[in-house]
Length: 152
Image (cartoon, rainbow, N blue to C red; front, side):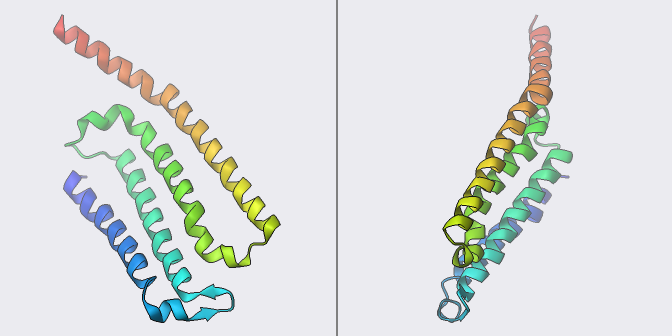
């Protein structure tokens, strides 16, 4: 997949979903109507921002599987793309899910919610570090030794 095609497929879709969520979430029709405790604007923002997060994560997964030919520099770092994207997605999802869940979470529910995300972020950080150690660092070291052989 080429860099331009990747950007058109995933980048544009991500930006559009984000913009629609942001714009529609501010429209008075959505801000003034609710279903119980859940405002329509919060629901629209939840759906739009969630879509952006999912599109971004899927784009990162596609990038890790098949990086554009133009981005040869990225090959040794392919193993970090999905763990980094997952860490970013989890961190963003913390706030995005609150659009839909916050009206229904009590004090205990909010504490459980926070701890679920703390555990997820720590676990993903461990995955990111292990991906570097097991996948990327050996490839970077091999590339450096090839560069040194070419110079000598």
